[in-house]
Image (cartoon, rainbow, N blue to C red; front, side, top):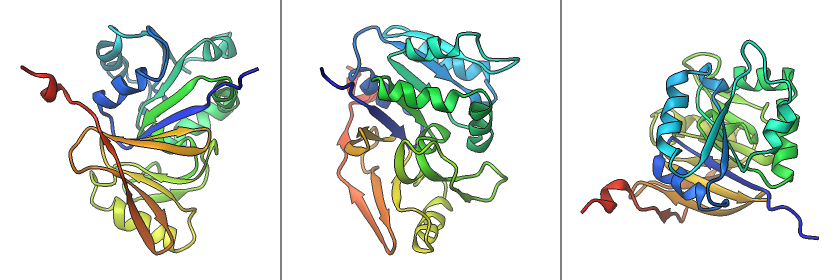
Length: 229
């Protein structure tokens, strides 16, 4: 009996080209569950995802206010992809845990549902991450879901304080891990890095260890500009 393929695509910052590529990893017309908890379930975010992906996927959304759906487990396990947006990572994780969604995400991952997202939706899969959930200052948070070992930092080239802060944190004992520039994705199969994709020439991801930052080779994805006549 074949074991389900456990996949996570962790993205440094939103990029439509990346999520087009994500859909190539799952069956045609996949079922996608959009989870916008970190962004306070902003309906405009949900509409943007729907407009972007509706020609290739069947999209539904999960909301926790005023309460989650009665059959939350059934909804989660019926998906091909679960997509998590950006925003406040700490608040998102707290809400998920109150309703047992954290446990369901692990069950979904282990059953073959692809997990993906950017910013907060990148950090959450790891044991730890760099976040601004507690104010404008950055914080090293050790409260992730722990599906992937180590730590993560999104927006590595998009916010000037991210790079020096993450490097200092790892040098001072924060878990080693991965940083991703905006519009760059890390594709994990199981808990191993299988590849890096970028939608921007020159942008990539990095492996951070105490005292070292190693750029990772990235596959450049086709952009909408590339497809223009």
